Length: 91
Ligand code: C2E
Ligand code: C2E
Ligand code: C2E
Image (tube, rainbow, N blue to C red):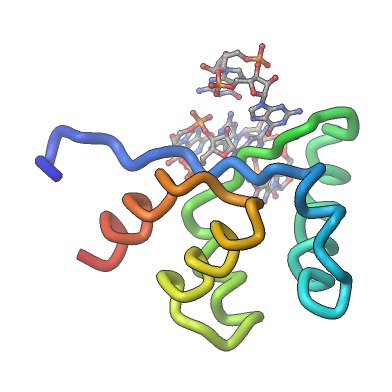
């Protein structure tokens, strides 16, 4: 996209996240719970996270940000629009 186009927000669907088996989603579930706790933001159905947090999560999952993003989209935890955030990041 153009330089004036802002990256899309990364919005986690917490209901979907809670439905993914913990052996797959455990690290992300704990990360999201930590952010909720730090913000005092407990009652949301969604959680907006930082672009930087996706990079951190990619290190935790030992994957590239784009591969992790595809996985989260596959789980229904991120919107397909989140792809543009990674393209923006790596492009
Ligand atoms: P902090 O990074 O020092 O941010 C202090 C406060 O600045 C935050 O308090 C929030 O009111 C505001 N703030 C900072 N960055 C943003 C932003 O991008 N958008 C908005 N809307 N506000 C922002 P808050 O929310 O109570 O968070 C307290 C601390 O919890 C933060 O201190 C940070 O250390 C941690 N935290 C909260 N949410 C996140 C997150 O999504 N990712 C990471 N890595 N840390 C977070
Ligand atoms: P939006 O960013 O499109 O968010 C729409 C709604 O999604 C929010 O309505 C809220 O119900 C939910 N939501 C999004 N991110 C989070 C999250 O991290 N935690 C929780 N608990 N809910 C979340 P809401 O709160 O009525 O906000 C309406 C609009 O007001 C937002 O639309 C956004 O444009 C603006 N807004 C609210 N809080 C912030 C903020 O911290 N930073 C900025 N820049 N805008 C905000
Ligand atoms: P947002 O609040 O609409 O902020 C959009 C972008 O503006 C952020 O993208 C960040 O680049 C910049 N920004 C906003 N407030 C601050 C600030 O206090 N300090 C700095 N250094 N930059 C700021 P980013 O980081 O990718 O965050 C995306 C969204 O995640 C934010 O949208 C907000 O909804 C949420 N978020 C991130 N960090 C925090 C936090 O500490 N507390 C809360 N309550 N929400 C956060």
